[in-house]
Image 1 (tube, rainbow, N blue to C red):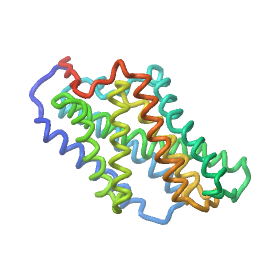
Image 2 (cartoon, rainbow, N blue to C red):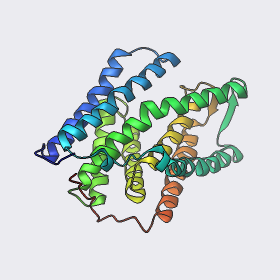
Image 3 (cartoon, one colour):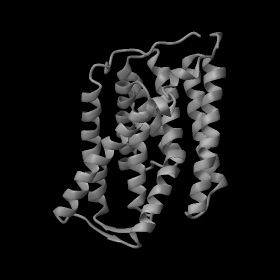
Image 4 (cartoon, helix red, strand yellow):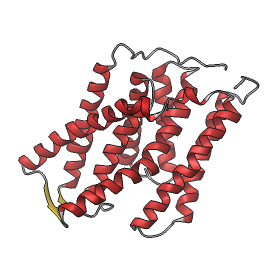
Length: 269
């Protein structure tokens, strides 16, 4: 694709940020009903169906640059980093669950059979991938962070997309309290760091899938467990330990690639 006249960077960032908010608001308006599994499936499919073409169109028409710069190579190339992201959340989270249960901070009681719980978990993996992990990572750590990183040092690009992600969460109604806003901001910082360290967004997708799947499985969405002490479980097992140890692992494994001052090259062909 030839490089030609294109929209200035601030306008590209604004158009895609507003477009993402409008997509989520539209889906919320179309499927504004009490939670049930078919509605969740419809939301997940519709989100990916709308967001992926949005990013494709923005890359072609606004950026006038190749898709490759967005950091989403084929799964054949990225599957190891995808699994790395999953492991970076699951392993320390498992330690956190063991600590919470072992010290009696949390009680977990199944509502249903293990077979049914596994089926719900498998379905949630797919729905989280389509509804949250893929579209959100593609927009924020893919398109927006990439564009910012061609003009700004890596740390500023990470910070910029984190602010945009937090604002997005507020505008779509997913982060309206202080603790939720803080979670969105820290989560975006972490996943932005994954992008800088690994060079693409697959590790972030894996981490995102693992986090959201387990959070929903042990919450009202999964509805297969009764949890006493859910706040402690969320803080220790789903937040503090996976976020800290997950980042430590990625940083150590990719320390030769990690540079907070670097800018991403801008291809012209």
